[in-house]
Image (cartoon, rainbow, N blue to C red; front, top):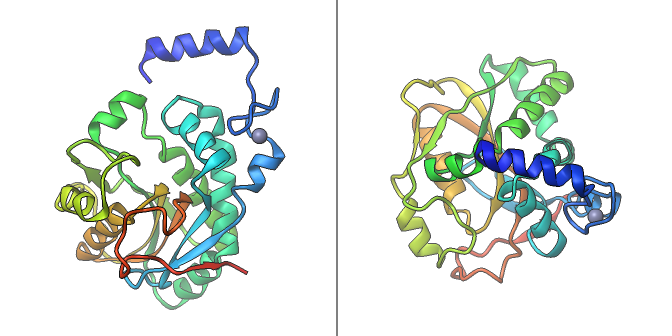
Length: 250
Ligand SMILES: [Zn+2]
C-alpha cells in the first residue's frame, strides 16, 4: 500500500470501525471463531527439510482465505499480530521448538527465521514485506522458548515474473515459471545456519520447494516450513505424485 492508500485506509477506519477480517464481526481484528480456524495444524511430508514435514496453521478456503487476503492484499496490517501468534502456536504444536532445542545443543549453528520472498512488484504494491512482522515475532518466540540465539534474515529474493499469485495455472507451469527466480541475496550468508522458512499460503508447493533448495545449496540446514494456510489437497491441479498426504498434527 502506498502512502496515499495508507492515509485513505486510516480515514476509512476512523469513519467505519473495523470488523473481523474473516467474518466482519464488529470491533474485532480477528474474532475467536476465526482465530480457531488458524489453529488446525496439518503436516505434509517433504524430504527436503530436516523434520521431513512442513506445517500449516489452517486450510486456505472460506473464512481463512478471506482473512489472509484482507491482510495480505488489502492492507489489513492489524492482523499481523493474530497471524504471528498463529505461526508461533504452530511452531509449538509441530515440534519445531523441541527440534531446534535438541539440535542446537549438539551443534553451534545459528538459528535463522527466513520469510518467503515476494516479487518486487508485490512488495511495491503492498508498500511492505508482509511476512517480515511474522518472521520477527516468531524469532522472538523461538528465542524465548529455546534459549537459543535466533535471528531474522531477509535472505531470499524472488525476481518472479509476475509475483506469486494463488490463482495461477497448474503446478508444472508454475514450477517452470519460478525456476531460477528465487535466489539467496548475495549480501546474506546462510552457511552453518538452521533455517525455519515462514510463508503465507502454500498452494502447489513450488515456491516453497524452490526456496528450500536454494537455501540448502548455500549451506543452510532447513528445519521446516511454517505456513499460515495451505490449499486443500485435491482441489489443485497436481499430478498423483505431487499430491500430499495430509495428516493432522496430534
Ligand atoms: Zn471472525
